Image (cartoon, rainbow, N blue to C red; front, side, top):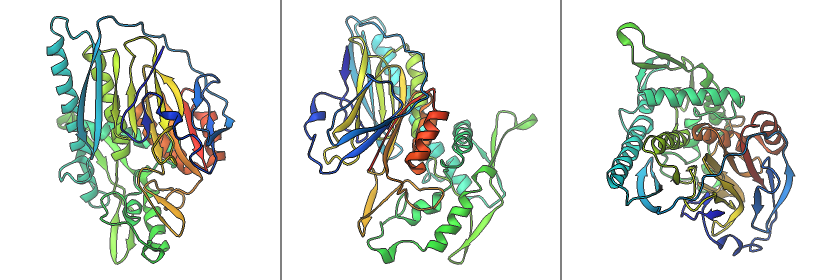
Length: 393
């Protein structure tokens, strides 16, 4: 038995029968590529067709959780990292101590989200990211354990994807009007100068030079990051590297909430963080949730594909979340590290299921920039333990 989740987020539709309502409402046809086993997914929008299957996925089937008697669901909303988060827990709330346990759990989730936001925000003055961004080139900065863990994951995925995931494209993001920029360009003359973008991109390519360390002796229990010495000149300024860990930070938060689910003894429910990352536990009526991935070109965000998920985390990146068009060209917030410009590879949306949500967040961003052929090869050879799906124009 599978329940269809339905939420208001743009990348994950978790719900009823609305998926078929807009089939055929778009004129174009889009191609879907996935390594999910045959029979484990359903393309639900006729504008999307299976372009090809990807080999290599090999993972054991998860044991289905049984139906739980006397369970009801409770829902809690949070706001963190400038977006909404939805927590749903199913349990026997009539049992002794159930209310107290739930109260402690939702408080712990809220505290975790607050601490992660404080560590990774680019706008909080004393956050780890802000301290790194404000430091001089070559400086060593003390950071929290959260910052250390997230940067460790970021460096791992940076290397694993050959630099296609790169959180040091901070200036590029701003130059195209995203991040903390105030305005989008409105015409071609307002787009950033290519020479300046080349400088920003060259600076970002030194993300591999970021060094992390744990303190020893009197500094035991402390964490540090050393900023690359490299700088570039742009518009009369000397610029040192800056980071934006917002995307991978949401995935890290989902991983933390997963651990809290286990710590407080909850096996059923889900946690949906904005439009990018999600934890799916078990469905209390038995079986899995049927999660829909929203079509990136669907005006009403109807799902283009459904797949059953239980006990896994997933992340999605797409060119439909933040974008504008100039001269018929789409400019989105995801930057291609090989060009320094918004991705224009033909890939519209990527979802990765399984493993760490923080890793999945970074992996989906990287795959967006790879283009179809490289993405297929990467998934086939390097994501054999995770399910993936992407769609192309």
